[in-house]
Structure formats: C-alpha cells, structure tokens
Amino acid sequence: MNYEDLMLRAITEAGRNKYTAKPNPVVGAILVKSDEIIAEGYHKEFGKNHAEINAIYQAKKLLNIKFNSFSELTLICTLEPCSHIGKTGSCAEAIVKSGIKKVIIGSIDPNPKVSGKGVDILKKNNIEVEIGIHQDLVAKQNKFFFYRHKNNKPYITLKIASSLDWKSHFKSHERVYITCEESNYDVQKLRAENDAILTGKNTLLNDNPRMNARVNFQLNQPEKILLSKSYNQNLDKLERPFFKGSKTTHIKNNDLESALSKILQSDICSILVEAGPKLANAFLESGYVDELLVYKSPKKLGETAVSWFRQDNAIEKYGFKLESSCKIGCDIKDTYLKNGKK
Image 1 (cartoon, rainbow, N blue to C red):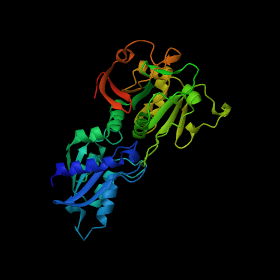
Image 2 (tube, helix red, strand yellow):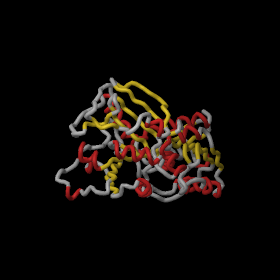
Image 3 (spheres, rainbow, N blue to C red):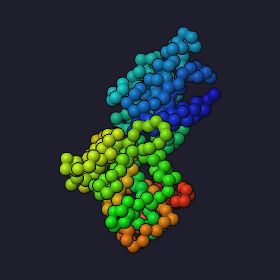
Image 4 (cartoon, rainbow, N blue to C red):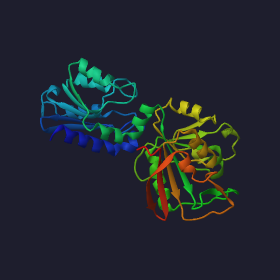
C-alpha cells in the first residue's frame, strides 16, 4: 500500500465526520510501519481531539506489540497538523513529543493561525515532511473551510423556494407550502451541511420557523443567526422555536458588511441564508452570495402573491450562471454559481 492509497483512505474515512466536526475541517491520520497500518485517527467532533492525537493514542496501545518505537512509524495526515493551542493542544508538538520521524501531509492548512507553522515545528525537530499528495481532494472535501480562510468571508448560499411564476408568498401572509416533501427533506440536509443559518425579522415573525436540521443522523446543529435592527425578543409575546435547540445569535444591525464582520469573529465558515425577498435581494445586490439554490414548484400562486425578484432575468443580472438542474419529487432544483465559478 503506497502513500497515495493511504491518503485516499484517510480522506475517505475523514469524510464520515463532516456533520459532527464542522465548523472545523474533517481530517484523517494513519500511522504505518512499512506496509502495515498500525493505527488510524479521525477528527470526529468539534472541540474534541484532532485526528493526529487520536491516531497516536490508538498506536500507544500497540507499542511493544506491533512496533517498538514511534520512530519506526510514518504518519499520513490529510491536513497540516495544527501549531496553535485552541480548544485542543498543538498537534505538531504532540507529533514531535511522540518520536515520529516522518510525516506525509495532504495539504497545508489555509488558516493563517496554522498555515506553514505546523510544518515548521516538525522540520525544526528533524522530522522529514512531504506535502501535496491529493491536496486538491483535501481542499474539495473541506470546501467551506478553505474558502473562508482564502477569501476572509464565509461561503454564502442563498436558498429560495419559488412557485412556477417566481412567487414567494401571498401578500396576506397566509401560510402556503410551495415545494414538495422531497424538496423539504433536501433542505434539511442542506442545513446540516452548513455552519449557520441566517434569516431576518419578517421570516421570523411570519413563518415562526425552527430553522434546525431535521435529519436522521448525528450532527452539530447549525448556529442560527437573526439579522434585524428592530426586533426585540423581550417585546415578542410568542415563545419562538427559532431561539431553541442550538446557539442563536441576534445581530442588531441591518448592514450586511458589518454583520459579516461580526460573524468572522466566530469559527463559522458557511452560511445558508433562508429569508424573504427583501433580505434575499439585499444579499444578492451586495455581491456576497456565492451560490444560489432555487427549489421551484410546478404550482402558480398568481397575482396576489409577492414576487421574489423585481425584474426579469434577475438571477443572471446578479451575475449567476446555472451550474446544474435536477428533479426532486415534483419540483426542480436549480443550482447557480456566481460567475459560473466551481
């Protein structure tokens, strides 16, 4: 088994933790002696041990059984070992302390707190380091994490549910379910993939949403962000489910630039915007949206309903290009990317 195969194994197994490790990247680590895998470790849950630490811990159980010294082992790691002390200790320092003498790394960490610094610690302690095996796969697997640290902004996806005639809701705010059950479940998975869900006051008051990810697998629930200058929870007579179940942040500011600056103070790498036409168009006009998802129903709501957009071909005019289209139940799901980027 060569290093490329081992790296692919580590990447594949790391991916199983995508819903529980977020907003951290998923990472895999494998310790080998010659062609034999001695131990594996993965970052399974946000705030808990990183992959390298788990691999070293597992290997210690086999010390003097399958190997006599960590210097006999090579560590294959999908992402550069962290150098800083955050919620856990420095993985690079733990590798040095273990006695491992060779480390194969998939990709350098794009986080400025780490980038290159973990490798420097290893090299300064006479550990042989190789970098770059399947680095594109590591970056693709951790798309949101890499995007945030390379662009200094979270990856923002705007999701809308539209009738066939591009309507959002009735002017009377009468509750109407536009899309089918299959689309609704697809949205739950979309929520589960993102670090945060953002909405505005109108959606909060009119729809009274839970805005959690209702799925049948374990996950780190997305943080919920309310963007509203005027909403006052103390004056709200209703006990809203939006504020229950996971961390909720109320940004008392309608300025998107200021809001994103505040969000960047957290670990959030991706935001799913689920809001009405006013806030949705504000995000589109700002240029902050990276991906637009449209779930379109075959139903029409007619002239008594509110339009998503004020002009024809609005999506294209905002600079988006259709990337893919698929059928979900009786609906159509269209994915648009900004300027056609992938």
